[in-house]
Length: 509
Picture 1 (spheres, rainbow, N blue to C red):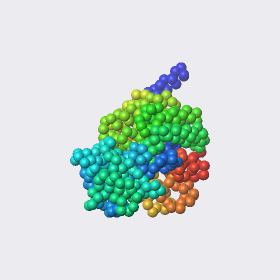
Picture 2 (cartoon, rainbow, N blue to C red):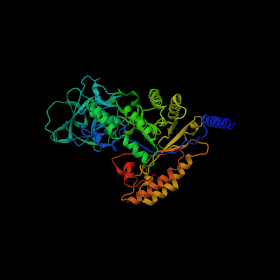
Picture 3 (tube, rainbow, N blue to C red):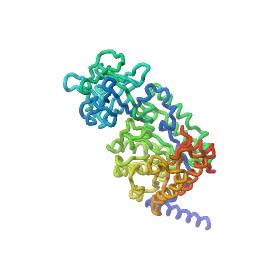
Picture 4 (cartoon, helix red, strand yellow):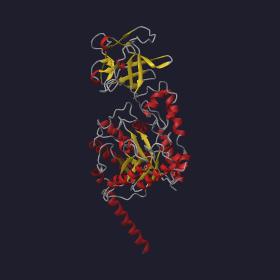
């Protein structure tokens, strides 16, 4: 009789939990995550692993690089007149937006040039002579493909060879044509010579794989996946007070082992290994879809080719992203370590509208629930001037939803010129208030999916860093779903939790 009563009681309790879960009420997570991100592993971020780019020819001219070209003969910069849609000229004395070109790399010497208004530089084939240089094409073709030829022994001087076999030259009044046939002696009066300077670039998965090319990239990436994170790292994580990892992945992982060019196969096998190690050491995994087709934020970690943010502007980019969520959930749904699926990382407002994000989140949520009723679904807030509760209306109607917020003590002018103590005071005064605002009694749990121990304090001592980290842990431990430090390993010490733990900056046990 006593056993039957207990069974009945447990059954009623289980039914109550399921009803509460299914009606979108706030559900207390099974336990709070104390996790670390495995950034830079299955999704390249150059500042984490700069050595991945070693050996790339002309690695200052990767996809997304933004060169300026100044004529050595006239001292004027090449420019897309009106930002694009008409001729290329060379009549500006200062290099700025219209004078900056964004590269699409074909190989180490051949490129497409994209201009400010997103058109591509090419030869005008409509007037019969085919030598006028214009920026009118919405997509690149043979007429929009140019070769950059560097002066031997001086990489800052270049000539630009057009698809007609001639070189670009600057004529009177800044007119630019592709009809210079002579050999160059690289003199200062040579109208076909330009001084090249680079105003920025990207170091993501697209850049590293396309930069190394189809022959070398598979070897480079597979060696990286097999050595950057290994089983001993999961053992280290478990032994040092952490119970979870958040793993960023790119959308092409669902096409393994033959993803679309320039990506290479093998990252899915590495993710399989992560689940095996996690199960062995009792670690929970959050998979985070960091990169989607077209890029959700135009940054390197979204594997954008050139900084363009195009995800969500067409239904196919949303559906392709849903398909990746479906694939990953189906693959790992039965693993006891699969704790949460994060549908999208850091969509950036205003380009990523709330309408398109909500549409995708609902479709992605349905894809997860097709395969699992217990895996949590993480919705990452948009970056920008948005309300931290803007996803609450969507979350109320869904079960097992968690809101992911990212906080860094960098990247914002509010942190400039603050002392160590002022930074700490700011955390307790403002950051704790922000987390409290996002944590409501009837709202979804909150996860601090990314935070770091770097700040804008010059000359900070080890004790300053320790006090800073302790304050961060004190505040982020209040997050109802937990937190994940960015990241386990990095080229910069204070971004690396492994380094911070081994050197006594962080103690979690």
